[in-house]
Image 1 (spheres, rainbow, N blue to C red):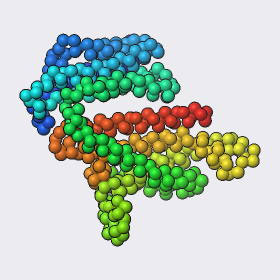
Image 2 (image 1 turned 120 degrees about the vertical axis):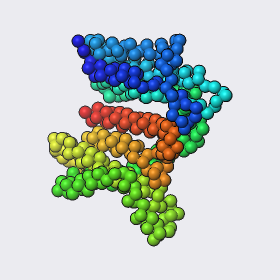
Image 3 (image 1 turned 45 degrees about the horizontal axis):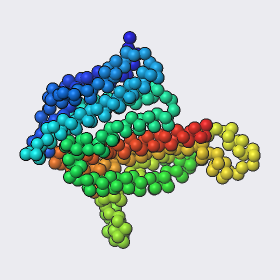
Image 4 (image 1 turned 180 degrees about the vertical axis):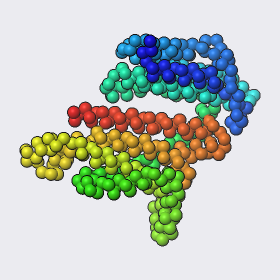
Length: 383
């Protein structure tokens, strides 16, 4: 009877969250805990129409599988997320009172869980709808567009998270720029060290075990501990050579963050480089050698292009991992979105925390999609 058990689990989880958790909460100010906004207030009048797409998702597990069903589920999930965003913004606007400007209306637990369940349902439907990664990613971006337009168009400006953004938009822009700059700066030494190491492991396989042992040990060190371990030696280095301070190098800040992120990122890059080169068919190398190519020509024109899809997969893991770890680097003064998150935690301001977390998740998802698309295109090109 159940045709799609995955969707059924998502629907049950969403219904349970709707019963147990509030969709929105309202508080006198940003520091006090909010009280749940009753569902009858949320669904007052025509607002309940925002949940109409949920009917398709509830019926989805019992519908026969096929392109039409999967397409309907994906569209309904996208429409549900957009409808919930509009609904939250409309309720918050109706509760706004000029006499109490400090009052805040925030997303409740049910909103976040429903949004995540809908996103997972859309992702599952797209996976079943098409096997083409590029088409799947394009459809996902297209379905996210209504929600993005609602947020950009000011539909949720009355919500607390957008009030935090309005108060700190300059700091927010600088934090996003710093976050991206740290990740970009980390990639330079990571690729400069990781690619030759991967090639060395491929060419001298007896070196693979000690190199991977060292890189695995680095991965086991907690990130905050590694950031802390770098403070003392860098501070001593700057004290020994004060000229380094004029280059921006110090025991705290961006320098130890980039060094630690580079150390963490070496394992996936070295492993994917070695695995990609090992996966190159021997017949392709023999054919290239047979037509008179030198070893360098075989490496540049045969091995590297065929190994690139696996290398890009490793780069995807590296970048997504770095997006999250860079947030922790805020604890040693590196800045970025982590600074906003920890500022919110220190002030017990959950919406300020979300102002840092939501774009962090967005950057990670976009980086993952972009590099996944690049890997799929390279794989299709090399066959």
